[in-house]
Length: 182
Image (cartoon, rainbow, N blue to C red; front, top):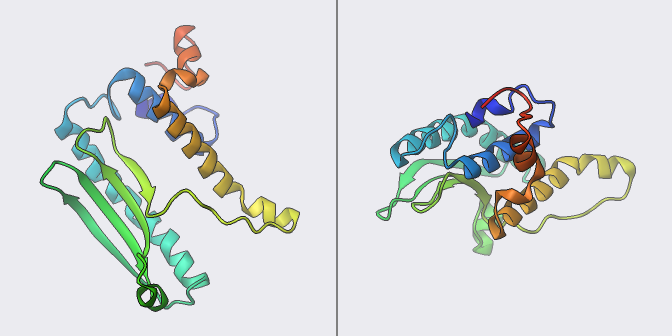
């Protein structure tokens, strides 16, 4: 049961989700053992509900601080495509963005029809600004650094597989599973 596997682990919180993700790939399941697409879709729907206030918060922070309250946050709810993909999108649009003809800031939870489990992405993820001019500036970038490193590792797993993550292979090979039993 991968959702409970790392609950009592002392690993940093932001890495527990990544450990669960890799364990799902290893075990061929999602969450607490979901195998069927319909069971995974139920978990996806619940995840979207859990994500909603945090997605809105992240966008509201940008709106309040950088857009001076001029933006509008929208949420799509879950949308299912004819091909079987499921997605939920939160956007932050504002007048200058619309006038420039560019897409809004976007957070997306998606579950592609051929995917083992759902993922998160942004509309243009891949480039983060680096404006560090002091130790305090650097400390403020820690969450961004965590996200970049975790995403990079996630993508490297997809170039290879979960076996490049020693915490997944070694702990199970030795029978030493942190945070509980399987």
